[in-house]
Length: 75
Image (cartoon, rainbow, N blue to C red; front, side, top):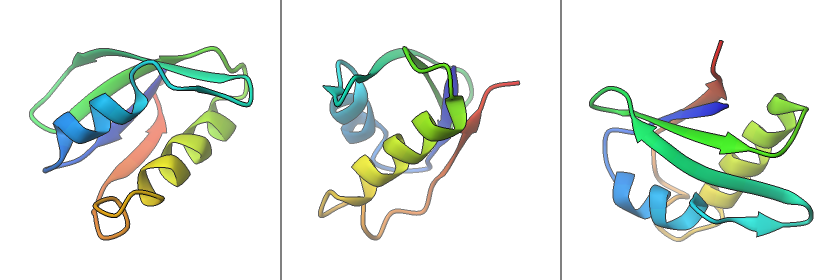
């Protein structure tokens, strides 16, 4: 499972990643754990690679290019 911490644009992040399925990588929104922490399941065994895909996907959006957020692996 991966997490994304974002103070704004949370609904856009969820809409973008929930149901994402490209190049064999999938994401499914699980829940909001804290005011800024969004949790997503992925089918990838390499969770660090999944984090990179999620970050790149968000940054490719017009609103994501200027968005401050953190992403990582849930421990």
